[in-house]
Length: 178
Image 1 (cartoon, rainbow, N blue to C red):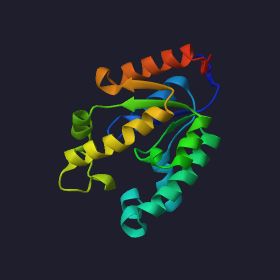
Image 2: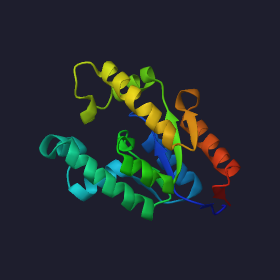
Image 3: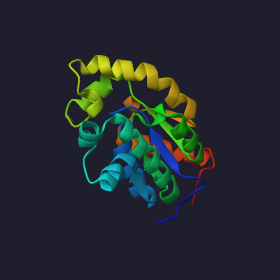
Image 4: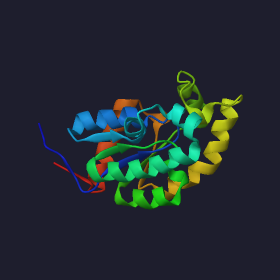
């Protein structure tokens, strides 16, 4: 099996339901590189679920943890799955410049379908989830675009197809070497 090396860490950004965690795992397995999910690492550091952090400590506290955790992840992993709101802070957008950023664009209707099965999403604890996703998209889409090196529309490929495309693009951008 080939040994792969990256010029810099890869950070997957995008909305809830874009497939960041799934693609992180598949990329990690395929390339045999270390990977970290920022949200999972936050829960590990805080010793509680993100939904509990939001309820007990508030969103501002969570966002502070998120920034600290992003810095940690950039220092110790090669593939990073970020949370959907990580690009909301300028500090995080600046930190992401240390990585090759892949924006996993996902149409709102597909986000809605994919997030219906998971009720453990604090940002979607609202009456009208679809409208909430539209509102988040309006704010976050330009921010995702501003930090991204490449954009992949996840509605056009299955997970394996996305991974193959990412690997191809990483090679073309001279980020991935065997």
